[in-house]
Length: 197
Image (cartoon, rainbow, N blue to C red; front, side, top):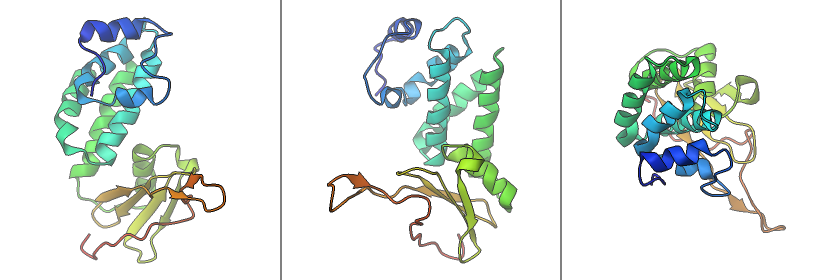
């Protein structure tokens, strides 16, 4: 749920570099289609103290919408990207092109070689290509891509069609410490996919 009652309260927050909505995961509060146009506007405003932060939130939220295929938010994302395409700000115009590229992954049917898999993984997962694990599945039908870290997302890309699916492992309690952990990128979740996918 968008944390601001109106546009004015958003701009009061954005104009104050020390204003905090919550101490942890504040960015997740801003992951709401109701705020996309305001985030774009703030990211394009050279005078906005939270310009870079709003751009970062916008980038991450966009990746989540398209990566996890949250279809009910596509319309708001397209509207914001259309607005951004005519922005005078270089980063905001880049973001609009990024949105177009992400949507092309959802709609274009095409074979995916390793270079295309690296591009898709870089766009859809968190991290630059040199921090990602990208390899062929044993069946040779899919690219398997993973983020580094203790709680990675996994991306599976059909080599023939470009269709993709993302997944994230559940965290499991460690018997000795009681802390939760998830498998790293050397562990691959079994994914049941048919030869048609």
